[in-house]
Image (cartoon, rainbow, N blue to C red; front, side, top):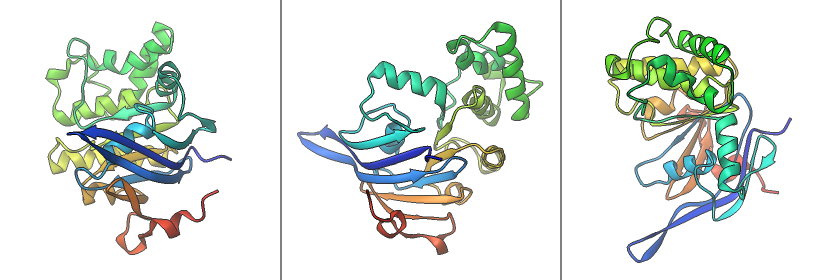
Length: 243
């Protein structure tokens, strides 16, 4: 079976103050289906840019990207939007829920875009909320929910249409440690269910909950290994020869 994510030599640069900043530089990685991966790096390391590339929110300047067996690096904006809506679930640091929609209605959104019938999407959204422990909170407005509950709603929304990949950018960054730990436990449960998850973070306590860790520095992967520091190794050795 083909890997879910495979990039070869992808790079992305941006203009900044009259010069060019290479945010991601020649990154090659492979992520198999069902993996729980963390991408860790300091601010400015390029991790958010890499997430945008993997999530098809942006296009690389060079290199190739095969997602779910399909080359996607050069897709049009409409093509990338279609892949995102069907195959990628996003979780960001700030929940970004629609304030005038209930928790249940927020979770239904991806199903509305997918053209699912009202009765089926209501049932599916309720099941998704139940999976994150919010079966009794579906009728609440976002401002009636705690920060942790809001993030649970986001997780339900990200997983409601059974995407091939879940991408999370600093998902516990705005939460206290106890609530953040609960959210990370949800990610572990999703991984046990066979989901493919990529978490982008600067925090060791978040990265260490993953099963595999990429360390990013100056736009390049410098280490690839298990989330245990004892098993990290230089990326050039970990990745093996490129085709």
